[in-house]
Amino acid sequence: MIKKIIKYEGASYLLCSKQHIVNYLNHLGYPIELLFYNTLENTRDIYDIIIKQKKNRFRYPTNCLQREDFSLIGVNHNCISFESFKKVENVICELVQSGKFVLLWGDEFFLPYRESYLKMHTPHSFLLCEYNSKTESYLVHDLPDFYKYINSHTIRQACDHVDVNLKYLIYFDNGETNKPNINLIMEHYQLFIQKYQDDYYLFDNISDILNNKCDQNFSDNDEIFDLLDNAFSILNGSRLLFSKFLNSIQYEQDIVKKVLDSSALAGLIKNILQKNRLTGTMSVKSIQEKCTLLKEIEMEVIYNLKKKITAVASSK
Image (cartoon, rainbow, N blue to C red):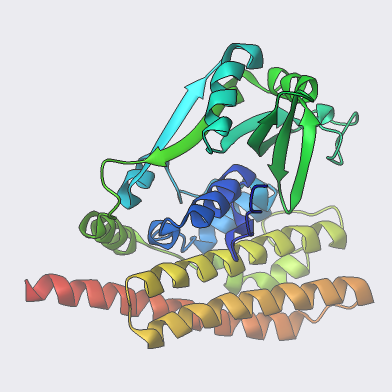
């Protein structure tokens, strides 16, 4: 029996496919935290994408975990495109029988365990872990903790009806070296921080957003709460992941604590918004005060991160 994959704390703001990858590589013991060097998501981007464009947080296009990043921790990211599931089914069976997990995209309309089953055509990713030739079924792992055998016909339908751009499979194996390339990771991190800019519009204008007086019109308070819930979920998760990166490179603990404070405060604001929604109240002043404090913490963190990089560069 395959040991279940534990959900990685903080990764829930990522696309479902990236959540699977984080959970899986962490399960295999790879130092996945080293790849969180750019998870400090920009609040202006969060505002533009989540609040203005009204996208769900699971569609947020983070730059974290790009394909070329995995080699930095000694992992090969393998991707195989296909026209139909049947044409790669032998490959998939060989992979899962060798102990590898395979990531695929499927149409939820055909997946009986998903809410969109027979209702909506929605793309969704999942892992195939085992194949049972007697029952002709795959052991499917899906978020958050789904582990069940699904017959191969169902999997075939789901994969064949997904958008053509999502007709590919991903699997991982060991790279040329098992040691992470710390020097290159640090170069990527330093470049990311050097380029990091934020105007903190989300924090400065939270009162106008809550009062529906910003540059984006909302249909009702429910829509405002939904979008802000998504925005602060991203803030909460991204700061938590970034703190894990800092810990992985043994960064100064006072700065790590500040990043964790930022994550916790974003989570608190998210919870206050949820409570306000349930009670029908709107604590605009309280939320604005907490957003102002959150802005101060964020600015202090960025200032110190940039200062440290400048000091290191000057000492060389």
